Amino acid sequence: MSRLTLDKAKEILHKHTTEEHLLIHAAAVCAAMGAMAEHFHEDVEHWQAIGYLHDVDFEKFPEEHCQHVRELLEPEGIDDEDINTIISHGYGLTGATVEPTTDCQKSLFAVDELTGIVYAYSLMRPEGMKDMSVKSLKKKFKDKRFAAKCNRDVITKGAEKLGMDLSELMELCVKGMQNLEDNLKKN
Image (spheres, rainbow, N blue to C red):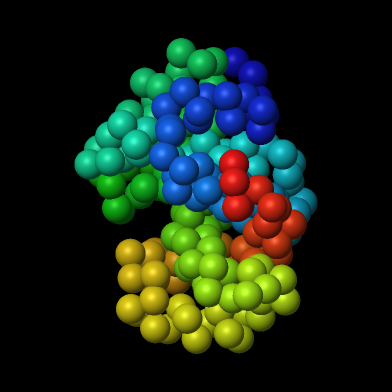
């Protein structure tokens, strides 16, 4: 078993995922996880790889999301800790039984839904991600009709699990996504 790299995560995800919106979401979560890793002084590429691969079973098993991660990743040689981290982002939502307890797991849980709101907001703005402010993002966050499928309770719970203010979490997520904005357009 070897530590998951971003190249390996991309190779694996592309075996199981073809829908463009899922690949864009993978890139967005990857980018946000990179910023979270920097914040926690952790291995940026490793956290990005976790973020990129987090929905590996979603396209094939949308109704059983997070319940097929292990069967897809164990044959690829992905270690148990990384598999559990990926499964943990569905805790309390998909029947996933791994509770987020590490900073990486809590970060993935928190940014997964948040990236959807950030990305949707960037599509509305002529300047995209550039100069996106947390203040304006918070207004969109409060509008439950905007990016309505993104679960605000999960985002809020994720920030709490991390011991972060929602604004700080949003700032990190935006920063990460700004760093990889070109990858969000086409992956």
